[in-house]
Amino acid sequence: MRDKDLYAQILGIKSPWQVSSVELNELEGEVTVEVARESGSRLCCPTCGKESPGYDSRRRRWRHLDTCQYKTILVADVPRVKCEDHGVVTVSVPWAEPGSGFTLLFEALVIDWLKEASTLAVSRLMKLSWNAIDGIMQRAVVRGLSRREAVCVTQLGVDETAFRKRHDYVTVVSDQAAGTVLHVGNDRTKAGLKDWYDSLSEEQREAIESVSMDMWPAFINATLESIPGAPEKIAFDKFHVAKYLGEAVDKVRRQEHKALMKEGYEDLKGSKYDWLYNPENMTRKQKRRFKALRDSTLKTARAWAIKELAMSLWHYVSKTWAQKGWDQWLSWAVRSRLDPIKEVAKTIKEHLWGILNAIVLKVSNGPAEGINSRIKTIKVRSRGFRNKERFANAIYFHLGGLDLYPEGVVR
Ligand SMILES: [Zn+2]
Image 1 (cartoon, rainbow, N blue to C red):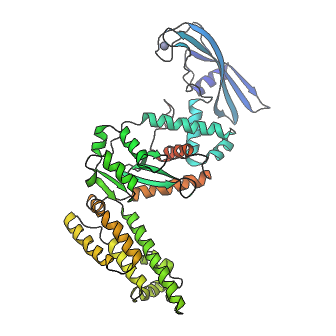
Image 2: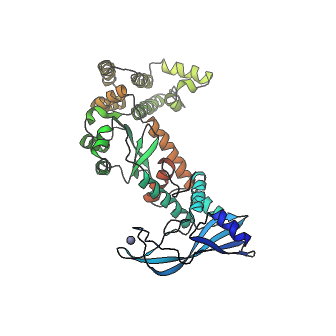
């Protein structure tokens, strides 16, 4: 008798349910707790709550938290009622969600573990199939997304991240202030991003003050068409501009190095990373060597100086002064006689409006890049994803800032 009370307490079983028996199978290392309804207790339709006549019952099992190392299984005959409006439906039980083979507390424990370890590791730990663990994760995300209140975001970040192969991308929209992922799009098309903007209310779209992004036409056009005042809100991110200029410097270096080697000069040999990294992170010896390179009359040194100047042009407060600074830079870059630099300069000139927005709005994809590196960690941990839905699900689970736990479980 006492073990029944004990289990009723452990499991939080309350009237009209009661623990009717506890069976220990030592060989299997399993405890089976049978729960039954008190006879004569009224039955209600789970949809409308109306008292309804019983129809039949179904035997169901739920995995619960282990007790003293024993796998613990809850068993109950769950009645079905015949509701006037909803037909034959299974009544809800207080310890589990409809359709789940796990109790609420067990699901919560799995969610806790999934935050720390891969689906595979958790499935081994819990001695459950990979699919069962993945199901708990998926349900947690559905729960979290449905609970997410109408978000009011002022600073959006739109970025892309590679899914599996190099040219297969997903779009990640983030709330830069909260550092959470709001949306994972299946591709990186204009239509995809537009669909998401369309899912927002008019107030939500109007509340958006900045959208930080790369100079990617699909993202630009979707935003221009969907967000009121977008020409003042689209901000081209500093890190992406730096990346393009860095690639241009590297191209200049490669071309020049090749030409020099032909003549028998090794000035640029082994200097690739010197031009890419921040001199502040160099050792004294590296610094000395790099200073000599930088001060040389090499084309690479000129390209590098042009890039460095561009990177110093992000501190302005006034748009007018920023415009003047960049105009000067553009005229230098265009006259540099360095084709890779001229090419990036052309792109920058076309997109200067959004670069100026980024400067005065003081936004960048820094937070989105942080999210990107966490997505990479998720990918490494899971050793790749079989499909994009799973990938998106994991991103929402870890980075969505969602309330993932079943109803009534406090964490
Ligand atoms: Zn009903």
